[in-house]
Image 1 (cartoon, rainbow, N blue to C red):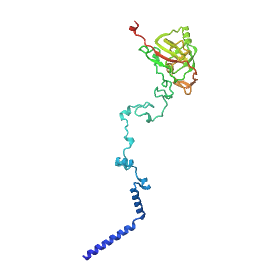
Image 2: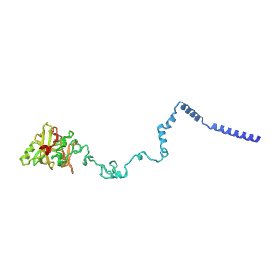
Image 3: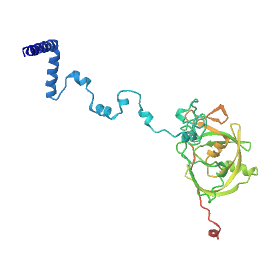
Length: 309
C-alpha cells in the first residue's frame, strides 16, 4: 500500500510538473488576443484582422453549394462549359456570313473579315451605305417595274426622304439631257422634252397599268404610257422603260431599277459613285439643292371584263 501511494504521489507530481511546464509555455500575447476576441464576439463584432480574413455570407453559401472539386479550386466544370452550344449537326448546317462556308459562325470565322452589305450582299460597302437596301422605298423588279403587277397595279411606291439625288448629263438616243439620279425613286420617268424628242424620231409610247403620280411641284397625274429609252450614263448604256410624265420638271429621272441594272454603287457620305466590277473608276457628284422629285407613284386597280361591261 505504501508503495502504491508512493507511486501515485510520484505520478501526480510528474503531471503537476508537466502542467506547470505547459503553463510556462503559453504566450501571454495569445491569451490577450483570445480575451479580446471574446469581447468583440460578445458585442457582435470582429477585430479588423478577423474581418479581412472572414468570408462573406454569400461566398460561404456559394462554396457550400459547389462540389468539393470546385470549392477546393481543383479542376471542374466551368460556367462557360455549362452554357448550351449548338449541336454538332446544327452547327455544321450553319453558314458563315463572312466566308459563306458551313461549319462555323461569323464570330469564329478563321478567314479575314471583309466589308459587305448584310442585306443585299454587295461587297466592299456596309449596309448603312448600301444604295440598294438603305432606302425607305421598296425594292422593285426591273423587268416588271413599268408594266405593273398582275393584279392590275395594286403595288405602290414612294420616294425615300433620306436619299440625296444628284444631277448628271446622260445621252438619250444620242442626244444629251439633264437627268436627276434619284435612288429613292423606284421607277424612272421622262419629262416633256424627252417625250417630244422621242416622238420626233419615231419612238412611240406603249400602254402600261394606270398609275397615280404626284410630283414635288404639286402636279397629280394618272399615267398609263411609257417610253422605251436607250440611256448612256458614264459610258454605261441601258435600255429602260420610263413612265411618260409631261408635267415633270426634270428632263428624266433615273430611278432605282435603272441604277440596279447598270450596277451603280453610290457613297452619299463621300459624294462619289462607281460601278460593280470597276471600283477604280470613281465619279464625284454634288447633291442637288433643289430637286423636283416624284413623291408618290401608286398603282390604280383596273376593272375586270365584267365590271367594264
